[in-house]
Length: 144
Image 1 (cartoon, one colour):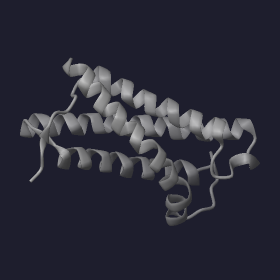
Image 2 (cartoon, helix red, strand yellow; image 1 turned 135 degrees about the vertical axis):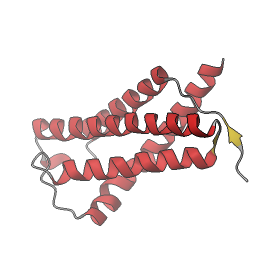
Image 3 (spheres, helix red, strand yellow; image 1 turned 120 degrees about the vertical axis):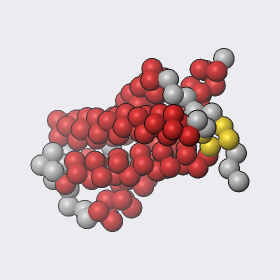
Image 4 (tube, one colour; image 1 turned 180 degrees about the vertical axis):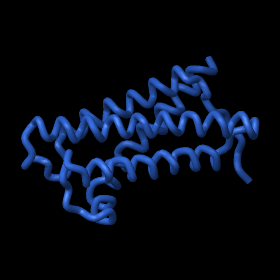
């Protein structure tokens, strides 16, 4: 049995969450330079970071609409819906960011499995807690 909870359907708060995630991701990719990106010059790294950032923001905006449609349809929210929405976000960002990685922007050499294990998964493990904290914080903020 899943525990029923609330969801923040405020477009303003969710847009802010999406932008915050994107800015954080850009800073992480551009300044921290994970995944041995030192071989890239700053301009190449900027294009990769901004592209992946924009894809991630777009994917979060897509799940806002999925989330709101689920909530309007079922008039409830629970951990199963939350898990589904976050899973869709992760899948969309994986596909989008792998596409950027394989494009002329990054010219990546990893296949999908290697990209997932070496680049995407470590980033997700850092990004997911931020997503959950922001979603909980803005839910609490919108209810006060």
